[in-house]
Length: 635
Image 1 (cartoon, rainbow, N blue to C red):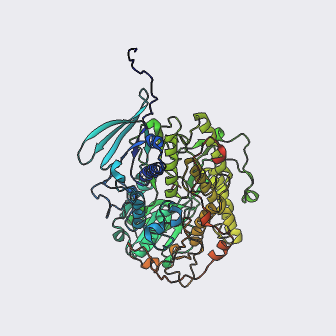
Image 2 (image 1 turned 90 degrees about the vertical axis):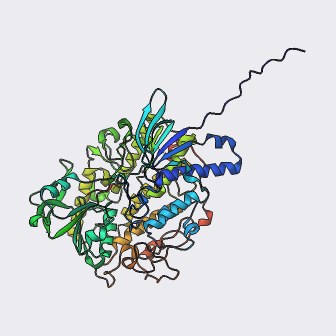
Image 3 (image 1 turned 30 degrees about the horizontal axis):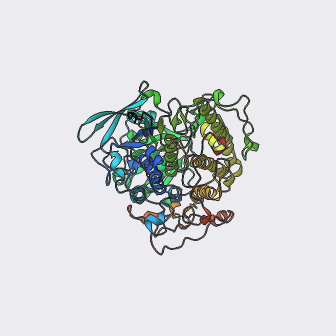
């Protein structure tokens, strides 16, 4: 017999799964970890050992002591000793329909076991999100290092790895580790944003009242009760805080804004007429020996493409002001990210000549006959496209991803983008070349520019023309463009955000189907319609009705609002919203019926939706197929 020889045949080795650092365990971080868990369970059920071996190994870093991010109220369920975190105030309620943020794998029926109102307080929804991720995985948060601040993220070109430095608040331990991928999920509400010109004006003018940001409302009752208050900014935080102030006994709220396009300005009535919207007016002088403010009208100057004050413009004096609240949004905290890898989150413009074809003209739309052809501005501040990103990935280094939302449906969109980022990491969704990413981004910008409301948001010259036209319409016809009959104007723009989200659902294999980028299906149309009805509930409030002393948009008719997952209809609040305790969800088994309204007509125009036919969701797809192809709060 021959001598035995060693078998030198090489067995193919399975590539090691990628390691991923996730910064933040708010909704973004939680949803990414949950997407992995959902995939893991599905693979285990199928016995897919190869798939299980390829799932990424994730370490999530959270500087707070608990998950939830900004959804945590520091006064009750956050850590009051941590002064560097941004949290919601205890009494916050949602401004959009809860149906927008219901998840297909864990429904409201699963969690609450009863019908709910259209709008919900912060705490029950936070509980819903936390139960969603832990109910099938009790050790879900084992992968999270709490009380750990990420101090630095750098890309090592030679090793093709991220070098991540961290510091633990409690143990004081400092570590430096390497990862294949990095996902920033620290939230767009990382730190308060202030218009510094107004802050300087108040300080130099000797304003004697109190100045706070909308994120600093732990003692809001003391700040507003029996007082005259000024809000700077007219978006969702101004709307919610104005209603909270009325509930807490404010004497008067004045809402000032630069553009006058925020949700608080198109609300047609406020309880007891305690809120006055000062559209297109900002403070220019401190008066009344430090106790009053003079507002001056601002206008969009096409020549400078800036908002300007003019000497011949209207002024308004607000006297006996005791509190100024800056409802001016937030800035994302990117301090830990290497400067070259920081996106602007759509706050840095595109040069128009670089993204629009020569002699570009807008596709005809409902406003074309009134505005004609408007030459675009030299710079465009787009809503859905960032100069450095392609669909949440860094163009210069796709190993770096940013988990955030630009859509009308923020929490649902973050969940969808978590699935898309995971698909990029596992290779189920293929990223194109950098050149192709830029080309596709330009196509998305064209989509924004062809939508007249989206274009007004990103093109200063078009906004000026649009605003001027509707100002004349108000004067000539005696009615506002915010009239509910403008359904056609609003639905077209709302569909754009939904179409972007539908595309990401398909490309990321998300377990829900609302259509595609070309056309929404019935479920997608219903989602958009409920968003429209939410806006309609604001602009149809009657200031002269008998119930105007207490009615808010949250007290409006619930017709047309129901779960897209189960079909469960929304129910009216058990009491007037103003009379509800801040921790009361507003639910009862036998709520009094609200009389029918304009909603009936709008809902009846829609086709019926058979929820039983809804499919589990599309298969994972290759994003190279373009056919299956994301608001800033401001003063």
